[in-house]
Image 1 (cartoon, rainbow, N blue to C red):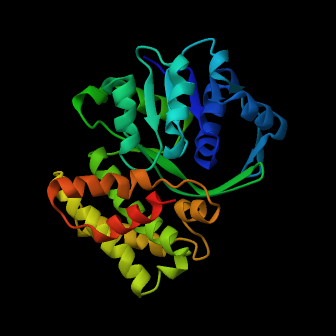
Image 2: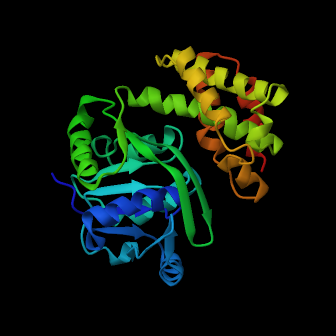
Length: 300
């Protein structure tokens, strides 16, 4: 199969960043965002600007699906996954490939249960720094998608994705062990997102030695211990890589979960501590930091 028609769900910063590559590479007749009627009207009226360049994306509701998609990419937060699943159903065909850029490992597991194991390739969106204000997205760097064959069943779909990404010049990386890389990023997210959200911190607050940085480190070590019981080795190099990444972040910025807390929006706790804590119980591992964060945010 050759990927000709692509749809995305979620016109946030990640959706806009990678949507521009499909828009330019495949043409506007072969790429669209799926959304409800209300969002379609607003998006069409406002337009969108990415890094100073206006884009006239096509928007479709699930009722307007006149053909199936070869590739569907979910770029929403996990809190919106059930809505996204319903919106994408009418676009799925027998050989549709599905990617999710959501944090954690849970979204792919959920999608596989509903649409079939063979359709869903594990994916990570990483290395981007973006700001979404009004109808304008700026990103520098723009980041990349990471994909990989978790099992032999994924190999053909990964090859198909590679051909498409090469053709449209979309930045990507094929992981030798995609599940390890996904778990490694989850280790980072559990540490930085949850700690900053719990204490309303900016990155500068954890870039210096002290209790808050220690909390980030301890939370990450808890995930490291759970991963080991799952047969995934996150070694000192993995840990050092993410600590270096944290120290390179804009000191005045803060992770999305902290922004959600301050804006009184639902958090993604379910795919962070909500994923790690049950596994820790299963493996009889103490994870006090993740337990604390789960308790804190489950009450909200």
